[in-house]
Image: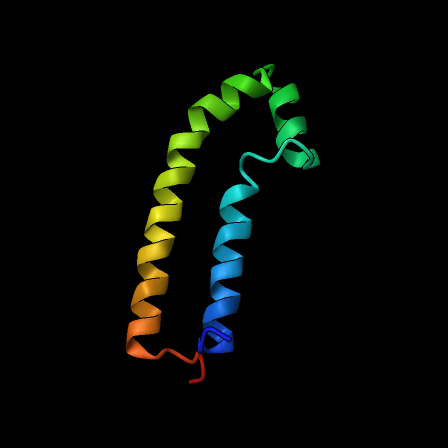
Length: 75
């Protein structure tokens, strides 16, 4: 509907999924890692949230570039 190449849409999903997994409280590795090193989850989120926003911004710029050049992912 948006006229995007399927590969660009998949790349956008992968970026969003990967970056937001850093702050998801339902992922066992995130909560387990915090528990193992005795860092409260709210402290982890406070530390990592600005970095996630930066990564999302970089991902948006990359997706914009891929759309602008008409990237298809095919070699």
